[in-house]
Amino acid sequence: MTILIAYKFDNGVFMVSDKKQSDLSFEGEHVGTYTLGEKITPVHPSMLMGTAGVGLGNHIRSLLKYILNTQENLNKQEAISDISDVAKHIYNIYKKVNPQITYDDFVTLVGGYDTENKCSFLYKLTNLNNFKYTGLNEKIVIESPSEEITNTVGEYIAQNMVGLKTMKELVPVCATAIRNINHPSVSKETFALLKFYNTETGEFFDATHEYDENGVEI
Image 1: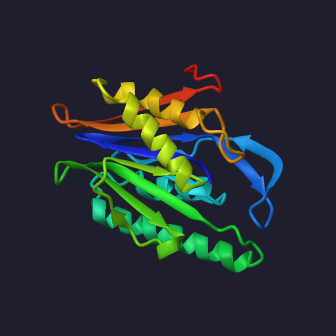
Image 2: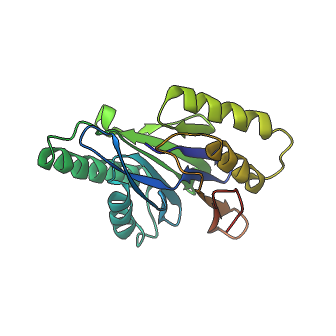
């Protein structure tokens, strides 16, 4: 289980996560090997998707990017419903084919900006409620391996965001909050994506920030 942070601001969202993708036993125990990879994808010009849990995230995000990315006039509600259907379908196949696997947690956060309603949005979908999409009112959402880690990360961000003037300044704070956690599922390397809408030009923009194990942007 990774640490995934999503923050919703007036004209968009950003997501930050660690990069560790651990190899696990059927019971969810670490077997000692892992790779580093991105866990956040722009699945549409208006929308980001981040995943945590079992190793389905890359496949689901890639498939949804292929499905959604060409739709210029995307209806947000229909898109979230499609994301729910795809995630549920792939997850159910995975469980059917691999009944011996007991570690099966999977969470995805989807956020972006709705040009029709002129507001940013954030949704959470998880296997715990059969991927029923739930709109979130909170500005910040943290998914992590434990409630203790979630609280620690949240407290660090709250203490260090005072006085910041831009969303870009908050991204390294979130990356540092992740890097401060010592857990076998969490890497020191972090990856962040911002998705925001320019109300003057009517265009969406992405900004990528990646940090190494020492917190240096690369």
